[in-house]
Length: 337
Image 1 (tube, rainbow, N blue to C red):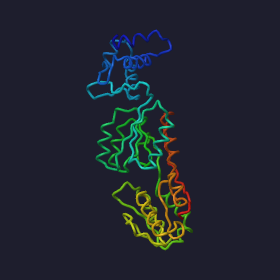
Image 2: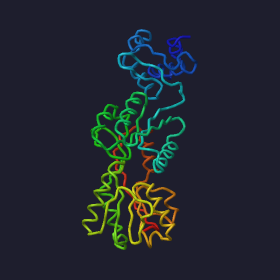
Image 3: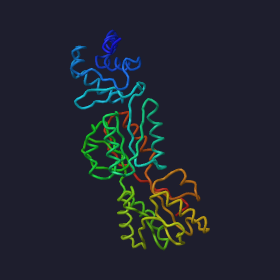
Image 4: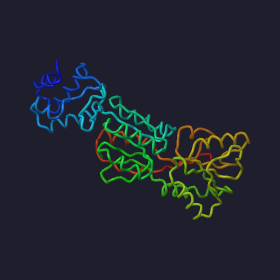
């Protein structure tokens, strides 16, 4: 049986529209082996001739198959089968910075909320523009939905804008896009400043407030701006360092970490020196995680709720409505302060 025969065999099912007849016919052709990965679908003009359907009906069916991740369109060449996973409702590309603990938390919740009929492929750009561009160009046109934690750089905006607004969701870091694009992102500067003000009485217990921040890493610039404004407004003795040097922990200092790597190093030094976090040394960490609730009686964090962000992202995909939301930063005061 040919592909056209398979599609025509569904004409007797009165509940199927012509568009649905095409989609189900092609899916059944994939399931039965009539079509395999690499095969080219008939051109739209040929399908109009063979089936007698309106051109827009054929286009709509092919676009739905693209949305499911079964078909890819190649400019000036046509439509090709790229997957035989016909049980998948939607194929989703998830592009993240890296697989850090909080992003793992996002992924696990996102995966659970979407369910088994959504295929999620994960990619990491490591805040590298060249890697981001390479990955994005490779996956463009192959997925029904793109969920992207962008590099906060306007130079990648044209890349993202090449995706249909209904198929792109910006998460985590905010990036200015045209009005019709969706996002569920964080705002760092004002939110971080306000949380530091809430902590002012505790911060004043310490002789010096130190932020570890590197321009070469994927740290949000808004945190640095908030920190500098805060220490200036409230006349806090301070310094900004690019990295924590193991063995340099000192009593009376308050350390603010964005990287968990440096956090674990200072905690180890506290343990080696017999210093008690929250008494001898103060510690604030960016991005909460279950481990930070437990170690040393708990680490104080300023963080968005990544599980909630993941739930909102999953609901956006399932509901198909425009979403534009800035997630709040939460303050978890624990024993380290």
